Length: 510
Image (cartoon, rainbow, N blue to C red):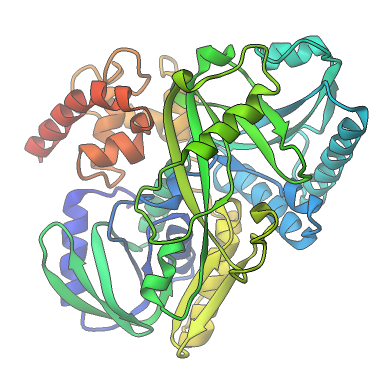
C-alpha cells in the first residue's frame, strides 16, 4: 500500500520501537537519494526503514533547478563518465521510472553574439545528442538539436532581445514538474514495496548497527538495530559521520511571474561569460512562474536548513539573464527566491581559485568502521544510481540475502495507467500522472476541483490527497513541499488559511 498518512506513521514508529529483530537496512535521510535507497532495498526484498528529522524533501532535494539533464556541461569539462551516467539515468527516468513527472523542455540559446561562440554551442549540443542516442533515448522522447529562425526564438521566448538576433540553436532536456514531487512519489513507491517511511524522526548515536530514534512530534525515543545503516543526509552527512568532508555549494534561483517574460514555452539559456560549462536559465515552471538560475558559490560555515541567496548572487543572475532580454528584469520583478546546498566532494582547496562549477559532481560511497555506509556527492538526475551503489555496498557489507537491483524497470506511482480523463485540469495530470483520477475519486471534501484559492491552480482535492496519501502532516508540509505554493510568500499567505481549514477538516474526519 503506497498511501502515507499520519496514522501509518504512528503505527510504523510503534512497530519499530517494538521490533526485536534488526532491520536489514536503516536509511537516514528523506531526500531523493535516501528515498531512492529505501526503494532499491525494498524492491530487493530487504527489511528497510527510512527516517528523517523533518519532512520528505525538506532539504536540498526541493531546491534544485527541476531539470533532469543529460550531462552536457560535464562534457565541456572533460568528465565523460559523469556525462554518460547522467544521460543513462535521464533515459531511465523519462522512459520508465517517472515519465509522468518529466516533460521534454526545449533549451534555446539566441544567436546574437560572436559566431564562433554559437558554433561552439552547436557542437556541444550535437555531442549531447550523441549521449542521448548512446543511452537509447528515442527522439520521440527527447527531440534532437535544431536550428531556429529569429521568429521561432521569439515564439518560444518572447522577451529575447531583438537587436542583432540572427536566430538560435536549441536542444532538449528533461524538466521535472517539481523535484519534491519526485521525492514523494519515490517514497510512496518504496512504501508500496514494504519500506517503513518515518518523517519527523531524528536519528542520533548512529553507527553501522543502528541508531537512537526520536519522534520529533512527541519527544519519545527508542533504539532500533540494523544490520546495515545508510547515511544519505547530503550536506548534513558529516553530522552523522564525522570522518566525512563535504564541500557545500549554494545554487540560487529567482522566481518571476511568467507574464513578465511573455509566458515562455522554452528555457532561455544564456552562457556565462568566460565559462564553457556554465549557463543561466529562465525556466518556465508550474503555477505560472519562471525560475531564473542557477548560481554556484562556496557556502562555508554552518549548514542552514533553509539557505538564503546573497545580494551578489541576485545581481549575477539578473545581469546575466538581462544580457539576452529586450526589457531587463529588476529586483522589483522578483516574487520569490530559493537556494539549495549541493554536497560536493573534493579537496577543500581544489577549485578555490577557479570555477566551483568545475568541481566533480561524481558521487562516492564510503564505509566507516566496516559498518556505516555513507553516499555523498552526486546530483538529482543520478539519484537512482547513487542509491543502487549504496545498497550494493550494504548488501556486501552486511552479508544480506537480497535480490538483484530492479529500479531501472520499476515505475513510480502514477507512471503507469490512463491519464486522459475528461474534466480534469491539465495541471493536476502534470503533477499526478495516472493517479490524477484517483486524487478526485478519493476526495471527501466538497468541490474537490475548485482551486484552493483564486489565482492558484492547486485544487482542494490535492490538499486532501497530500494528507491522506502523501505523508503531509500539517499546513507547512503542504504549502512548502507538496504544492510549492510557498515559493512565493504572497501566495503562501493567501493560501495558508484555506489549506489550514482543509487540514482541520481531514483530521476531524479520521
